[in-house]
Image (cartoon, rainbow, N blue to C red):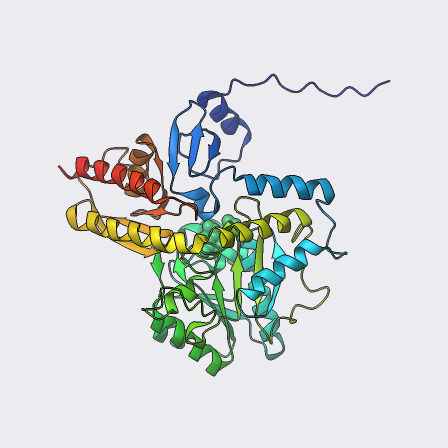
Length: 437
Ligand SMILES: Cc1ncc(COP(=O)(O)O)c(C=O)c1O
């Protein structure tokens, strides 16, 4: 007898309540979501199922590097999927080799490992550090308070925020958190078991806080002196988000150079390993970590792997994303429009100090810190100020991402236009002005 395949459920009405109901009934409720049900996007704009348009300044949390529905990505996906989508890592294929070549050339050498997410890229760095220290019994990794390194068990153990650990204890051993931008704190936390230090160049989830020059250079010196790996989590702040490939390159570049020198290792600085994801695939899920010589061969055959990592499809997209970023000079765009946005945000902070406390960040990774206890802020007092402010922006047609309770993040596509930045600022100003009265 012919096998009876159950008929698919009838098509749901594509409206807000029906889609939300599907989630309530069938999706693990691990996310706090906004009420919006998105349908499609184009460039810097995204539309919900009711047809409302939003200027997307959140960029899917720093992922949609080329905005929505970029034709080059569609084309790369189509072209590669007609040839070879997946091979497994038992075999060689050209796109993985070429993407590794492109990424390593942006860092002056070293090698790459490809995976599927930022959390998984960090797992690779943790294993690299353990392998590095193994024969001397060293395994500890020092990370920073307020950091965020992903939701895997080791990721939450590395992360310097209690809220991600709560309910999942005991943590993976071997991680210690110390205050960020505090070199003495790292030095004090060192033990004979320390193998590595891991930091974000700009803390993202922790509220958009950049590392200082002195901290980066001091960490490099300390790690050299004590034979520790210096690892950087570039998942959110990397891939040209600051106007340079990696945030340390922007933080350390000489004040007058404006990125013109394109020095890969300003001040002779280089971390030993960098994790990447998010904008790397511009929406196609992929991650990677980079390791510099002489550590690039530490993870030898059989010591690390992942089924989907570096598939022909993901690498074809990654190559196309890099090609568009370079062809369209998007790093310069980020620097120019990002500097404009930051200057304008600083003016709003000066004009409305009872609503906005500070503007921070670099390029297209900007944070707006809200003043404490804004008495006129509409919305459910049970929600954080950042969520309530984000809701006001959403109502007015702009998407932004909360970071912690008090900060809103702008992580727009790298090809955001000046006119779009102005549109976002004008919405932000009109909301701020209303609350300030
Ligand atoms: C700095 C940083 N590291 C790691 C991660 C985790 O990346 P993923 O969610 O792709 O696992 C994130 C995600 O927001 C991040 O911002």
